[in-house]
Amino acid sequence: MPPRSPRKPRPPLDQGKLDELALHYVGRFATTRSKLIAYLGRKLRERGWAGEREADVAAIAERLAGLGYIDDAAYALAKTRSLSARGYGARRVRQSLHSAGVGEADSAGAHQLAEAERVEAALRFARRRRLGPFADSRAERAERERGIAAMIRAGHAFGLARAIVALEPGANFVLEELAEKR
Image (tube, rainbow, N blue to C red):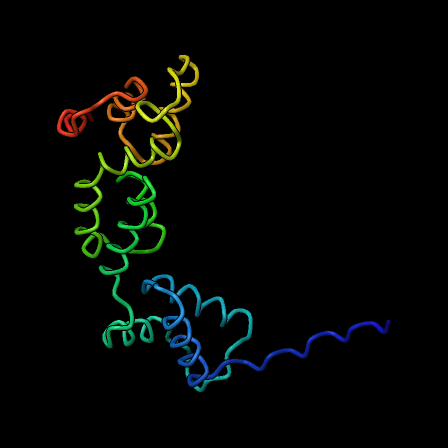
C-alpha cells in the first residue's frame, strides 16, 4: 500500500470565510458569544489570517448577537433546564454557565430557575443514583457518605443531600420540608 500523502494545507482565512465559519457554527450549535470567540480564535490560529486588516472576532460575535443568532440569556436558561432535568444542582449550573462565558447579567434568570428547582433536581439525581428513598435497601454508613459526596459534586447543598440520603427506602417525604434544608 503506498504511503498516504500529507494533507494539503488549508488556505488562510479572510473576512468572508471567517463570517461563513461563524454562521455555520451558530447554525449548528447553541452557543454563547464567548464560545464563538474561542472557536473563531482557534480557527485563526490553525489556518492563519489573510485579511487586509486584523480579524475582529468580537465584532463578529456582537453582530451575530445583534441579529439574534446568539442569545446568552436564552442559552443560560436552556442549559439550566437541561442540567436540572438531569439532576444537577444550582452550584453545578453556575459553574457550567461560567465556563461557557455567560455573564452575571445574562445568567440571573437561569440562577433563579436553578434555585427554584433545586429540590426537584436533587430528587431526580437521587432517583437516578438510587439513593435515600429510591434505594432498594437501607444503605450502610459508608455508602450513605458516598451518596452525599456524589450529590455535593453534582452541585447540591450538603444539608439537602444529607436529608435525602438519610430517608428510608420507599419513604414518603414532603417537598416543603426538604426545601428548608440547606
